[in-house]
Image 1 (cartoon, rainbow, N blue to C red):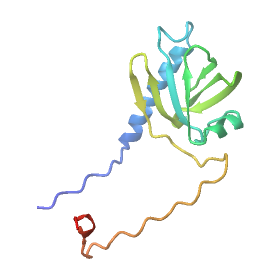
Image 2 (image 1 turned 45 degrees about the vertical axis):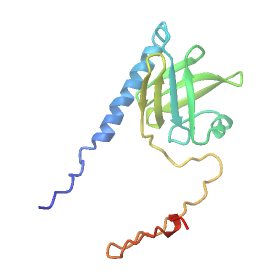
Image 3 (image 1 turned 135 degrees about the vertical axis):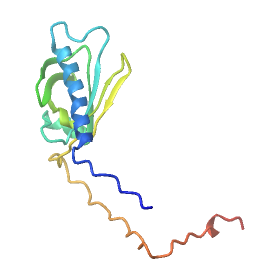
Image 4 (image 1 turned 30 degrees about the vertical axis):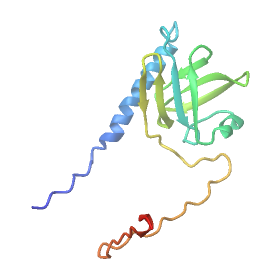
Length: 160
């Protein structure tokens, strides 16, 4: 009896779950932006794709982190602006205040070490406009045809 192939997820549940979890990050940032700031010892590590669409910041800073960047919101952050699609914040890098804007879709991780709370995301990445283009991908060798025999020799591994 043949087994039916799994049904295609036309609801896109994975994307809905990712969006809901990004809502947790937004709610946490809103609490950090409320009067009194972060409660207790809570602080956040936010990792995001620097090449994602909508990420904004000083070009020289983003160029130092061509793939991902992690920022910490703890004691010294200013101008936290929590929006519907992303957030903005000013942090010190090299002793100088620098402003960043990060869409929630660019996030790959959110971590609050105070309570060991971690969320990981699949970031929506756009082609990076910073820096040189990556080298072209190398195509993998073609897969053997289904009718071809699959022969593996073990001679190389035998003791001689």
